[in-house]
Image 1 (spheres, rainbow, N blue to C red):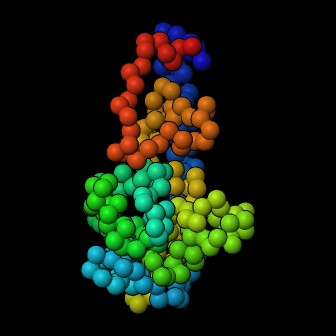
Image 2 (cartoon, rainbow, N blue to C red):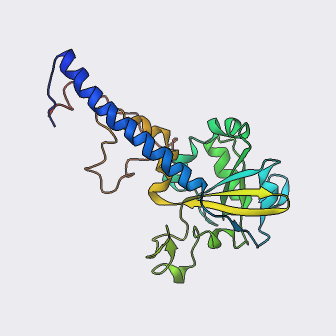
Image 3 (cartoon, one colour):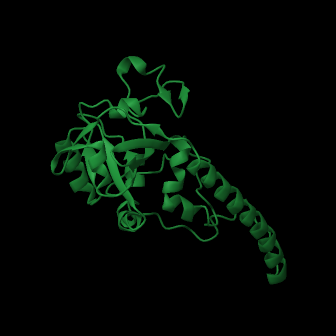
Length: 242
């Protein structure tokens, strides 16, 4: 794609026109966020148990003294040698946020169905510090539609649609709030709803070539675990000008 080459005044006119659209988008996004916060709450009736760094922890324990909890459902199933590349891409963004979330009364925890020993091995390899617990033997992943039995492959509900899922594990995010001794589920999102968590994508959206994924077989085909990338190729001058 070739771009017009313009004067400074012409560029500024075009930029201000886009700025008006960006401001409108910000207003729409703020309204959507407000609507999300207005969703009704659903009481969590099951007493889910997890295997954490200090041993057995219940869902209420994951709040860590906070009143709000965000759980990232990471695709790492029992017996998997390594976690999903896309979930690993997202997880590379987590450590920098947990301290800041804690200042706003939010605890952040990653949950996978793999046994904790397998989680710890992969976590060590990746060099991550965030809290990561195992839901192995619990209904938690199944109830939140991020783990599926083999027989559910064609009929599993994912992202609120019963259309099946190609893997036994799926990514997602769920939010909870604690009110005295009760825990309530307030929100869950899946698929492209997780896109906003990826600051690398947000930066790419501001780069001249954007995400540059149109020619790939699927949108995240380029993503690797951060210890698997080959050295980045050096672009030739003029490669983005056609």
